[in-house]
Amino acid sequence: MKMKFLIIFIFFIKLAGFFPILCFSQNADSAKDTLHYIFMGHIYDFHALGDKVDPRIEQLDLSGYDGIWLGGDVCSQSLLKYSTIQYIDSLFDLSNPNTYWALGNHDARNCNFEWLKEFTGRETYFTHYQNGITTIILNTCLVPSDCENLNNQFKIIENVCDTIQNSSHLVLLMHHGIWRDVPNLPPPDTYAQSDLIYWNAHCNSVNSTFVNDVYPLLLEVKNRGIEVLCILGDMGGQRFYMPSVDSIHFMGCGLSDNPVDDIMILEYDVINRNLEWEFHNLDSLVNTQ
Image (cartoon, rainbow, N blue to C red; front, top):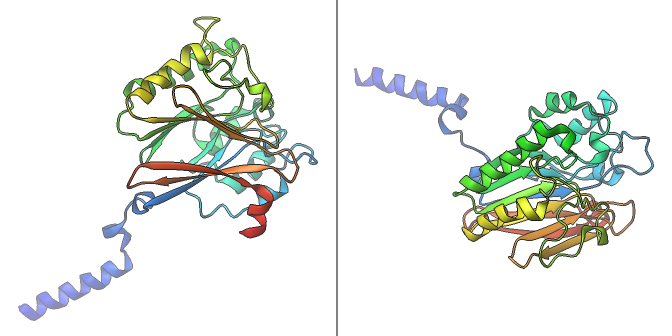
């Protein structure tokens, strides 16, 4: 009887060796002490006819990053042809929940958003939580002529800011410079490609600007001990970082087809819940990887 039990036990040990994932699988991200994210904005190829990213981006090895954050204007005509979004998907794995794409005007202007949803499985604005970081991906191309989506997007911002509690960081990812008049910050047109002075957060008031309606919500989050970052991608050949007077972090970078183009790499210490970021020269990164 004991011998029979031993044979059965050995059989199941061997069987488990063929199917270890059934017994020992865990979230790959949660097994890491440090996560790395790459942010890239305004990355379209200035010499292509609408359907390519900067060739240096194609050369990057992105396999080591836990998330790819796209700051918009991925191609100069991202949604004009179905083949273009297939190409973008081949580079950035759009269905991966940790790939974020904040639409830019070059992405949105051809309006084939059903293709985007087909590849991403998400709307053009959404929120996502991973390992202590909550991210809101904004569609800053939305205007008051589309009140339904503009209001829904603002409701997401409100809901997240009202309920967030377990996160160490809240990140707002966007394309356009929408944060004019934030205390202590220069206007976006001094460093970004865009400065949407009359951008509306929702349709309930013509005065629903970022500083009037979004910034106070972020300040409430900051006052609860959660760090807040706002990142924009509509920048050509420049980098920007400056905290507001309330210590909310504002930053961005983008490409302009020159040797001083920057991307940003963020490193998150999961154990200590600490997020740091650093700008990297794209040419140097390509040459050293």
